[in-house]
Image (cartoon, rainbow, N blue to C red; front, side, top):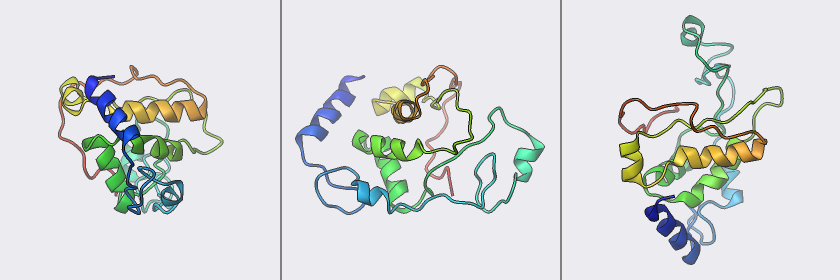
Length: 167
């Protein structure tokens, strides 16, 4: 961990946190507020989880990917979007654990070997002070009882921050 992340976590533990959803003090995201987030439900592509598709979308059929399927617990809007963006860009790491716990719910018939976070480019990680995807992945892997394998994927170029990744 970097010094910046250690300082953020110390500040988060010393000062009362305000919930990103309801504004009450006591947590970065209360468990009851987490339950109110808009779930990403079917119909969605069975592989890439694109909304509005029953079965497999044309893009996934035309160019099969290296993964079998993706899932996201929430639609990327409202409080879910704000929570992820604040964790990512404002350094509110206390939001990561409740979001990761929600993401650790997957179909029971999925054979999960490992959890692999999409890495940040080293320059972006230095600027941000931590890799939120790696922190999320570690919690998800722990909850699922599988290893977290941060070296399975490699970032080869700098890309702009994604603010719109899931409709």
